[in-house]
Picture 1 (tube, helix red, strand yellow):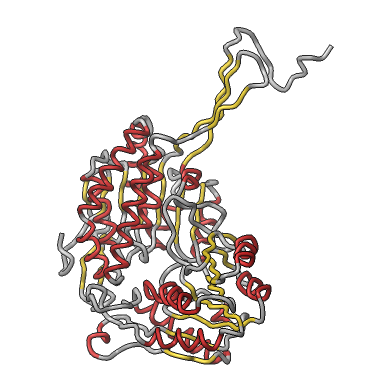
Picture 2: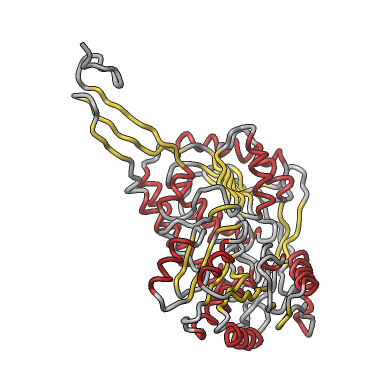
Length: 500
């Protein structure tokens, strides 16, 4: 599969590679160099409808395939991903911009998730309970729902499709995938490898295009009972409204404004390592990125000095270069947003400690590179401390004590990931209890989830569902309660049979 040039790719619908009905296309380009990756179908409502119909037709047989057999296909897919890991890693450095180590980690996460969900095919537990009546058996089971509309982002272009598709498939659903328009080739390869692994035609379909056309048509389609979406809060609200008329199941994984708390007894050097990785890994383009650092006043100056020095040693460059620490942001809009927040922070009175510049020297000028940016003397209510930037920017906030640190950490509308560095076990446990977030790390940064635990957040980070772990099965199944009466007579539950 070529990763450069102007090769034209297609949608995958019902086991066939097809153009968009309109014949229109859009181009994917490397954020590091501006070089073309390929042309992709600019799909519309007709293309989405065709994909949904194919998924509906495939569902009738796929739901009857025993769950262990569905899991075996996922097991084969995980092995194929392992085989293709190096090639996918290289493609990701070019199409998305991640550095090699992070791109490889993205693919490895998909491998891990697929293996994990393959195992769920043999243990998709329900419950059995004793009946209140004689000669009666009670149980509950999970059943698939139908066609899943999966709308995935560009920042984890292999991992996040696996988070959504692997549990959806093992539960017996079929899928229409609308990937991000910034990373269409990675999604294309994901689906090609699924097909190679033996997935029947129509079980997974891919429709390329833009959110306001293809994405909106998928969300509104009456034949799609489940929508799973990862993206911004604003788009998540729009998805919820568009899906409401059909009472769809909607799973949202939205924004974050995550904080790392560093207390006075912390290992400051360890904290600096964690902050550097959490704030500037993936160029800050993670929903779990640490865009706030809440530091106790006693170690604030030392932490600030060490963090700035470490950030200034980070090397910008293309992700495929082994010497690169920080790759590009995804596109022109992203770099403009990061730079706009630099101005906002300065205008608010925060002190720019390092960065805050678009990198244009040499070959960097061909891509979208932004220098790792740190603000000091940040008030917790400033916009740079409240709003998601989704770029390589973090804000240092000074606090007097533990209780203030917890209040500041919780004082935002999001609640995804949280972190505390401390040697005090009592404060660590209080933080585990009191931080309002779906994830809490102790003596580690805000990013690095494992696939067997639930992933997701509170407040405006989502709508209460979780990805990964067994919790993901709740998104893609309905509960069915089953009662078997073998008494040979009418028995009426909740009737006062003892009356009289």
